[in-house]
Length: 385
Ligand code: SAH
Ligand code: SF4
Image (cartoon, rainbow, N blue to C red; front, side, top):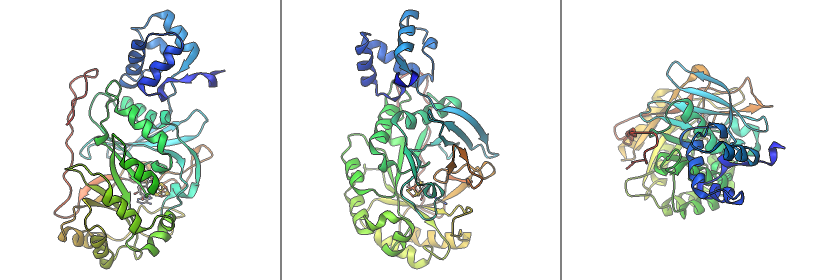
C-alpha cells in the first residue's frame, strides 16, 4: 500500500502544511517536519524527536519521505564524487559533487535520459525515459548535501546532469522553490544555474518567474546549419529567435547569461566561428564557457587540441567577452554531468567520464568566481548576499 502514501519531501512547505491539515494536524508541525526533512536530512518520522510519539505514528501511516537511495559513491583523486542514486521505480541517476571550483557544487539531473538528441551527448542517445518529479530533483541535492556534510553551508547547484530542465519545467521550478526555502536547505536561486538548449516557450515563462536561477544557454554553433546538425531543437527555435529571447531575458545588474559552447574539432572551432560568436552575442550581457568535447564511444566527434581551444578563446577575450574553458574533473571515476547514460537501471559500459565543471580562466577576462560564504549554524536563517 506504500505507493498511496503522500510523499512529504516532494511538497513545498505550504503544501506540506495543507497535507497535515487534512489529517487535522496543526500547521506548525509542518514547519518542523519540513526542517527535519530538508535541513536535517531525516528520512524516517521516528527520528523527528521533537514530535510526539503518537503523532509520529500517525504521520508514518499517512505519509512517506521519498528519498533517492544511495546505491554507490565513487570519489576521484581530485575530490569529485559521483553518487549513483536509485529512484522508487528502480531507475538510476547519477549526481555529482564537484568541490572547490571555487564553490562547492552539486550537478543534478532533471530527467532520466533526454528527448533533445544533441549529436555529441550520451544522455541524448538514450532518448527520454521519464521526467523526474520535483521531489526527485530536490532529493538529489538533499542527499548530496547531507552525504557531503555541506547541508547548512552555502553551495551551488547546476542543472547540468541528465535531461533538459526546460522540458520538465513545472517539476524543475517546484524543486528550486523547495530547495530555496530557508527552513530547508535555503539554496538561494542565485546559487543555482539552469542550463538549457533553448526551449523558447519555457524560456519566456522563466523570464517572468518571481525567483529565477542563473541562466546558461547551450549554444554550440554560430550558424543555423551547424546548430541544427548538433542540436536538433534549433530547427524549431533558431539562433535569431534564441538570441532575441536572451536579449529580452531579465538579467540582474551584476549577472550575465552564460553561453556554453562545446568545441568539436573541425566542426565549430574555427577562428571564423569565434568571430561570428562575438557578433551573435552583440547586445547581450553574456559570458562564454568553452567545453572542449568529452569524447565517448558512439560519439562521432573529436576534441580539438589545446592550441585550437586557446586560439578560439583569445578571439572572444580580445573582443571583451568574458570567456572560460571548462577543465575536466573526475576522469578516473567517469563522473560527467550531461554525459550520463544509464541503461536498464545500470550504468552502461559506455558511460562517460570526466566532469566538465571546473571552470578555469582561459585568457585574461574570465568571469569573477563566486565566493563561498559559510553559514554559521545549521538551523540559523540563511544569510546570503
Ligand atoms: N540539457 C541541458 C543541461 C544538461 S547538459 C543542456 O543541454 O544545456 C549540460 C551541458 O553539458 C550542456 O552544455 C551540454 O552541451 C554539455 N555536454 C553534453 N555532452 C557533452 C560532451 N560530450 N562534452 C562536453 N560537454 C557536453
Ligand atoms: Fe539533452 Fe542537454 Fe544532452 Fe542535448 S546536451 S541531449 S539537451 S542533456
